[in-house]
Length: 294
Image (cartoon, rainbow, N blue to C red; front, side, top):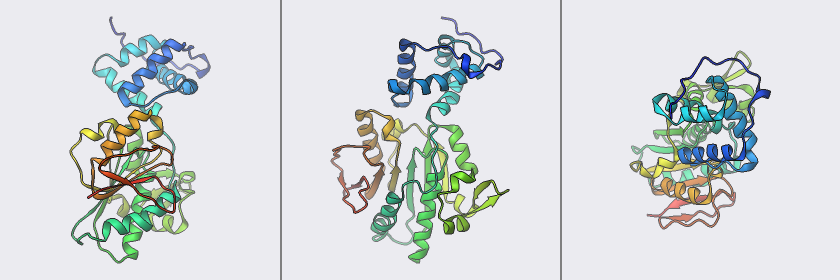
């Protein structure tokens, strides 16, 4: 089948998006799951239709069939897929989103992983599915303030990964609308950032030097070389996958923990999951976490 060349997009209002029947929806949902592992249940059909339809219009296509053929054919289709997946996977987040998980990290996890550590050994944390980066900077603030209070001159680094290039670009810039920073404690906001033009919050350079961002499909985690990480923070990501995918992803993440390292997940993201190399960490915050044995 020949693939139509993209044409210059013409402006079209959203209310003239074509209907998507159940067969077409199933095909688009299958493509999304095949390439990202994410499931798109029927109750989210309107979200998929709007996201695909608007991007389809921007790319200059009038129907889902031609756009699907373009997406799945050739180099330009791969580039267009990157743009579409940004629409389908970007989820708004905020600073200090899960206070209980952060308290668990500060009060139990960090003291545990630092206790036996020589001072010349760096601390490494991975934020998996970091979206636009607020979680990465939140973790950096928690770690930095903890080390200062403990009087530890220890090097640390936070790596944030996501499948969306657009989200990663926002994270790298480190500049957010003030509403995104409204959950920041006042002392943290004053110490680690600044207000720009009274409308935006900018993360300070000192903290930004402690973080890095990289594109990654979470499905590939288990195939990458082990990184010997102290903490993997993965919240509100597994909910987009089915049970089998969730367990496979969690197993892949464990692969990157050093012995004694901790995987922190969102509440209810895994139910009765067991892994031969981990133990569930019982804690007073009821945070779902697993520690690698050894």
